[in-house]
Amino acid sequence: MVFEQFRESVRAAGRRFSSRGLSDDDKNALAEGLEFFSYTPKAGEDLVGIAARCVDIPYWCIASLNRIAHREDFEPKKALLLPTVRGVFVSADPRSGLERLLAAAREGAGGLRVTVTRERGPEDMRFFPGEDFSPAELAFFFDRGFQFPLRERRVTDSFGPRINPVTGKQGNHRGVDLAAPLGTPVYAARAGAVSEAGENAVYGKYVVLKHANGYRSLYGHLSRVDVKRGAEVPSGGVIGRVGSTGQSTGPHLHFELSKDGRLEDPERLLK
Image 1: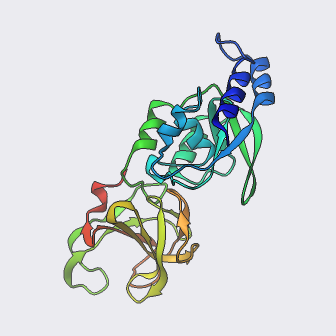
Image 2 (image 1 turned 60 degrees about the vertical axis):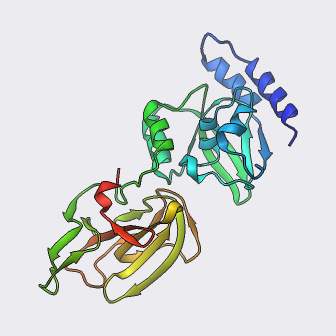
Image 3 (image 1 turned 45 degrees about the vertical axis):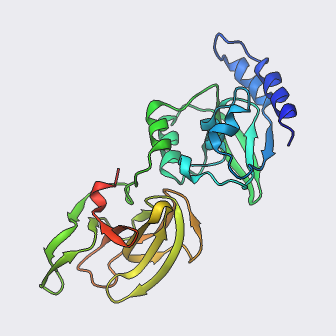
């Protein structure tokens, strides 16, 4: 992609509406001027730097179009789509925590329906021309913490010393237990790769994700595993369903976090 050609398309699209605000006619004009250019970042480039070359297309606009949930999820050498109109893109099938936040904040707000063609096929999105991320959405995008793996937070057993409810013996709880109904979706607490997906006598059906900076997360006692070893999972992607397999007294999720092989208290890192 030649950036000068892209920048000229951005300028042409920008001339279609007035700086006084966006009327319905302005939005329709913008929809007519919306194009997507493909660009493959070079080694050493980042999202903010690429956006700085795009005239009036901020990094959060590029992030929402390309379904990048966190700044650290950006992958150099992986093709990006660059839009010629500034705004926020919301997927019709939100999967990450950020996408669910964007969708919830704009529920019932309409938006312009657009079809985005990617390598894996077309995707439906809603486009809100001229909009920016809210302060909460920006904080979420830059946050390096882990997100809660269930939609609702209910900790029934914390990290640390405890009496094992199955064996009755004193020991250390390696993670936290989160109560939820059987079959409840379990979400990846952070983007990562599936390093293990299997079953054993203690964890039952379980998944282990490998994250950046030496972190790993484990999801145990699942009733079903929805990912395969080696798969890349976005933050908030569904990895399985709550169950009661393995050493368990009832439906719940056992969740562990470790950094460089050392267990950490998940409640200190979960948002």
